[in-house]
Amino acid sequence: MLPVSIQVRQALGKLVLPALLLLSVGVMIAGQVEKRTTEKVRMAVAGTLAPLWNMVSHARAGVADISNGIRQARHLSEENSRLEAENATLRRWYDVAVSLARENDSLKTELHWVPEPSPSFVTGRVVADSGGIYARAVLLVAGLQSGIQTGNVALAANGLAGRVTEVGPHAARVLLITDISSRLPVMLESSHAPAIMMGDNSDTPRLLYYPQDTRPLEGERVVTGDQAGAFPAGIPVGTVHYTHPGTPVVQPFARLNQLTMLRVFDFRQAEIEPPGAPGHVPLSHPSHRPLALPFKTLLSPGQEG
Image 1 (cartoon, one colour):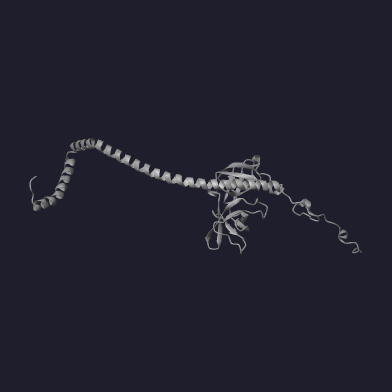
Image 2 (cartoon, helix red, strand yellow):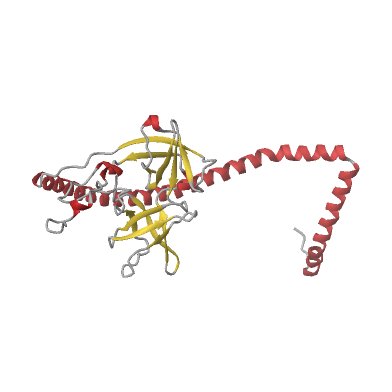
């Protein structure tokens, strides 16, 4: 190797960039003048380098697969540890549930518990409601021939959806709990305080008429109440959420915007009638109205005359 002075090396270093630029411009000009020759040279270079690029791409894919495998193995190890801990927790709760179920059965036997009749239900497919007087309602492909009646309770997979308002031979309309016409007696599960849930055509019905000394708590579960006898008590509805201070709403458990199937239950609440008390005159039915008696019969003995 010939000895080169520092000044010459510095001069050559300064000439490298201009030389490469001139070479690039020359190659571009030659490529425009001799396109066929340039294309042949380009394809020859590509064909020569293709195996090399193929080897590089395979090596890079292999390294990526190994890296993904290591990450997945680490993730599987963490997931396995989490599932083992969760399984142990669920096992403990399972033992507690079995113990409580046995104790519950024993207490029911000692108390001669009379179980309530199991409600009948019908499952039907939900279709879009294209008409009607309600803004939030759905049509169910099941009607009178399936045993559905007006007033039946419609449940989704996660909670209460609404109530049947109209029934035809092969279809039924279900008024959802978010409709502005919906009024539902509910109960705050933690405090057992009654309230009224009123729909306003939004996704979160409002919570009204709750006791002022028992304000709903954020995240508190809301279930149906039996104040009006329209719904059986204890059906899960949703949780309390405050959109603004002092304005509680209910976030329903059921995904009312994504309903595909509904179960319609007949709880037969109207068939449970209280026993008649002495002197009690029921006025709820027209046939139970008191007879019009003559004026003399309403007077006590000594008042005639």
